[in-house]
Image (tube, rainbow, N blue to C red; front, side):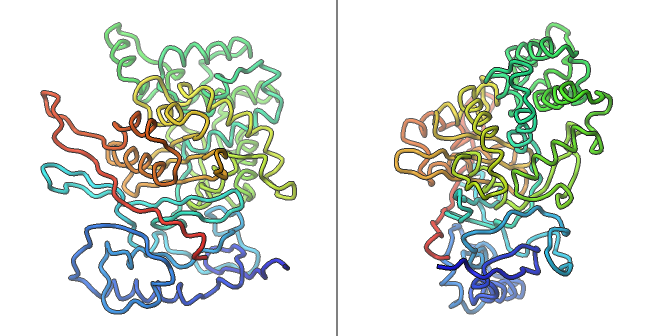
Amino acid sequence: MPPPRLEEDAENGSARPASTAKTPARKAWVQAHRRDEAATNVPAASKTSLVPAAEVATLSGPVAPDSPAAIARPATPPVIPGRSASRKNVRGVRPAPRPAESPATSSVLVRQVRGGVVESRHRGSVVEVGTDGSIRRLIGDPETVVNLRSAVKPFGLAALVEAGGVAEFDLSAAELAIMAGSHSGEDLHVRTLQGVFRRAGVTQQILGCGAAGAPLDALTAARLARDGEKPGPVRHMCSGQHASMVLLCRLNSWPFEEYWRADHPVQRLYAATVARAFDTTPEMMVLSTDACGVPTFAFPLYEVARAFAMLADPGAIPVADARAGLAPALIRIRDAMIACPEMVGGTRERLDSSVMKAASGRVLSKGGAEGLRGFALLPGEGRAASGVALKIEDGGGFDRAVSAASVETLRQVGALDSAALRALHRYHRPVALDPRGEPVAEAVAEFELVPVGELL
């Protein structure tokens, strides 16, 4: 069968199968949204679920903002070529400017409940993507543009691995994991990074990540405060990422001064590596500055899930795929993170580490700031590899929404068995305590991730 004819999508500049352009489902979704805007006094529905796209075309009358009809997305093609969030990523005439915000109402994923009263509602989107680029499960808007923040670290680290840094600096799995993670600043993290710096012949004073908010680990922070010790940059959650950049400078004889600036050679290499992982080019990426001072990049949520699907099984990427060259480096990074989960996060109360311990060898977890989290679901036990990306619209509400939605998502996609669910219960239903330690409120994740592959 010949491949489907592709045509230009003027909205985002990517080539999509021609059969999906201007489908009745897409027209119905737009009409439903316009009716929703006109209905100003319609009560919100109490439960969120995903409606098959075929049903949307039959809708009529006002649509409630929280109802399934209001959040249903138009039919999504099974494969979407990689793209960044940039306006430049076009292959024809420049498209009309895209709205900064999606017109769709995001789905309510988590509710904060106290005494039977819903105090807060956390909206967001979740998408699961296979290694072939097909969307498997979805709720919300897969085109939501997000900054990668710390979720970029496993992909950017491939620059050091490809450059021969593992052999040059004799890097262990634990040391690779801490460079791909966002550690808690505990003593084992400090000792690990100091060992790397000694072998590389550089000082930790070079680190440009600062020390704001460090360490994340509460017990370590309390001990340092008791002893009158001021935490340095090496205890910052991003010092591992910065260490990988310092090693690249050493390896290539680049200056250490202002290595965090976007025009520094190490940042250009880092950006080029990330662009390869997301099947685009550095010129097409939307650039901003992360809290630790280095550049970060924006992509649609779908593309984040697609990248994590590649991280789950890099060897499954076809040789003809431009991303295939990254496979050896990503396999090494993936295996290091799974083998050393405490280096990715910490030994206490870190979701990424807890998920990888509970689902050992099955799930890789890496969070980013403001309610973003990516999961690489490894193949095995009759299950094909996939990637999941989750975004909480308001940033997560003290992390409770991200935790609750993350565990619920992993449960629904079948990545957690009963033992893993028990181990992650405190993240699945995070509770708020009163001064006596009694639970008085909890975050409840209630949504439905519906398989959508057969609907496309």
